[in-house]
Length: 429
Image (cartoon, rainbow, N blue to C red; front, side, top):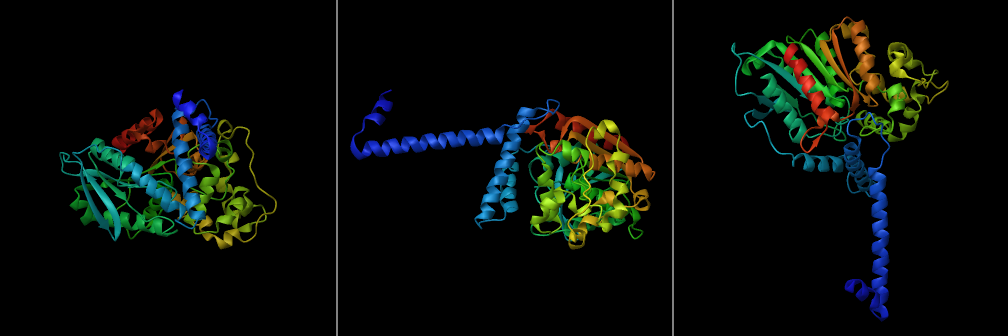
């Protein structure tokens, strides 16, 4: 109370200055409270795994994104670089584990990789292997730190397998098809018989795996390796964790249902696509309206049946949502951004002949994820091509949960997703 009296009681100009400071402090406090409430509060479905915890994680992600946008608008730094700096600093705080796993940073055909090896060999001296591509919208991610590092160590330990994580270059430094090409180069190098022998890997027991944008790269690379006669080694398995597989329809049932569900919002996914493909950011509104695939856009015609989720997916998945197909659209987008139609960027667009050469698949989807229908449609298309597919769908799953399986940002569904994925690999690799 004495301090409060003193603040009120100062005379002359000092009192006026103190009063002004108090007012500014009050304004700052109210603004901070409103900002915190805005960032934290988000109405979420009750079926979502640990919604309150997810609100906090999403608030941190949105804050970092806003900081990046402000930095770019002031001409200080590209927004992606600032976000990556923040992500790297956070990931570096996650404690190390699985110290018995040996790690080696090296290059495969000029591409940076980290190789994880268990200290114990199998009885016959040969081991399985997993090549892993990290997610992050082809723009973010620290594969050698934090959650991804722990994930690869956990896979190597529990599978007693060699795990290779590919540290491909990202946007804005490079754009499509560089990310795809670097992942493909690293895989071709690793699949060489002499390289597999070097790491004591059974050439019949190699899988490719990725989450989100990494799942996109894994699916595209698996297709390419499968039909590439010049590559002696092939993948036995592909593991796709909530993969992003197409950019022709931003109004699938899952995009409509989950457009405001963290941590991957519909608009953000469209931004990632434009960044990856090196396209004009101003095209985002046309993409969100599906103007690039309107009925008058003939270049999209060969792919419409592949993306007809009303026909491919069951009613309990699509619910009451309706397709968005404008009669007339924005001419020239598909010509100006050819990557939208390139199967190396959008593996869901591959024809059945290309899919027939793809390896057996494990595809994970989450109910509360804008990319749910990308994954579910790919399940159906692979099955139509005669490929064996295990589809694991999580009713409480959200985008990004695969990365939230370790302290301090662990979710029950994240732990379950990782454990189920490793269990499937253990049974089939």
